[in-house]
Length: 351
Ligand code: AMP
Ligand code: TRP
Image 1 (cartoon, protein in one colour):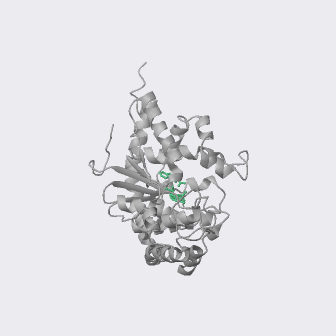
Image 2 (image 1 turned 135 degrees about the vertical axis):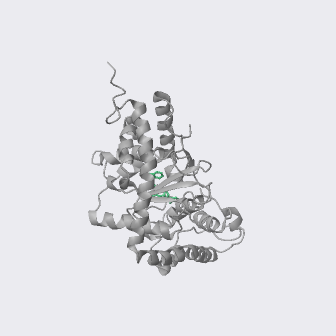
Image 3 (image 1 turned 60 degrees about the horizontal axis):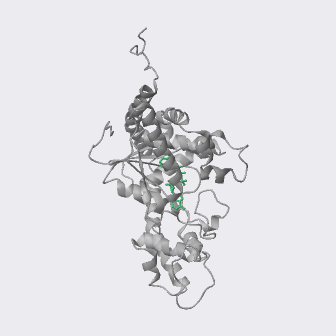
């Protein structure tokens, strides 16, 4: 069942989110944000800064406030156009949290325990000390998606398992209570095209906002000089001679990551890019200039938009208005389906 509440019914509904905490990086841009921008013109798109998800780990309140606004500004600088998509903060739409509870009552403890992101994030501090919100995080994420009847969810490869869970929960709910939710599809870049950008200093681990290895993370707010330096210092390997520069994720993760970066930016596959190079230094120089070519204009727009905080506030206010309309209608549908009595409604009282 496709229930269209507002917008253009012929366009696929798109929903995605990004956490405000931590430095946004090249992995975010290539694995997710550029698809958000592309989808704007061919979908009815809802994009949110998932500030509630940010509460699953410790953080300072005033830094959180700044980070949410900074992230929204960055999304505009990266090319989101509020005239064609809906941009909002997750906490401005209460239906996300309300529907998350319905999802928590649909998911099982066992399936949440299998989430690799939870296991990774609790590996250091231990599960016992972790916040319950970190454990139930995928239920809130499922709510984010299902609240908008999303057909398509553009994300990086690391979100594949969470998306699978959102689909399972939608299907289980529909089977139990009748058709209520649209079952979403993950939209993940094909392998080798930016779905999983790796840390330049440790190319066996993904580039991440929370990392022990910041030297390998190209931050979208890094200075051009720092970006160039980080790329030039990227770990490769010691193989030399003809054929050394090739794409092989298993045995040559460093070089392969650089080839993938350049290929993604140029719209080519990494194997083809490799044909043009024999020296690692030449490849790194071209990766650096290709990265700067996309990042510098974003930084420039970010500086401009930041001068007008009222504009960003207006975008978020009107985004929240549109998002609330859609999400609150879905929530009402879900409440009715599970048997919650509508406030002021007497239709269920017939004894
Ligand atoms: P997060 O930084 O976890 O809020 O992620 C925001 C979006 O960026 C999600 O769609 C992630 O899947 C995507 N993403 C995060 N890190 C990477 C990476 N290293 N490579 C590709 N996509 C990524
Ligand atoms: N979990 C996602 C991440 O860490 C962020 C996120 C929250 C999200 N809700 C979402 C992504 C809904 C897509 C759709 O990257």
